[in-house]
Image (cartoon, rainbow, N blue to C red):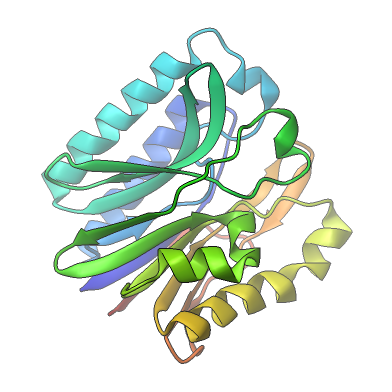
Length: 237
């Protein structure tokens, strides 16, 4: 089974981000990818003005509907980062969309201090089966917590990490090694592949330096993206 990670630029516009997801899905399908993960919050970004728009929930529902139809047409599974509004709370979420219209949603468990001002943390893990393979899903800072990864990866073939490593420029450079080492550690600890999809470019006054990666169960990098390009990396598992 061919699995991939998309590295994308994130804007403040849901419609623009949705078109990026649709285009990347088409490109991935041509590459033979059957399941593709995108960066954290890739549909809406982090700008408060975007997240507080009166119709943002409707925009996101429209986006998910378009992506679901594309997944069915291309027969590809897609995992997208987005905001979810539920029970008067805001969550940093990842939604799995499979070709048969099955969906699963995970809420980020471990928020950053900046996110805690706006988001509510999730409390559950997510794993799912697709094409006879078992997959787990976590989001960005969740990678710092080995026990969460262990619980999520139980009997899994691969772990997906949706990331958006936005920092001030000096810190973005300092954190590259750390954000490469942790996914590799999670792969070795859990004897599974790890697919990390990260954003690139500037957003909310910070930058993300890409370096999306795929680590195999032995901790060897099967693929590593660059710092600036929108691209897709993939491997067979």
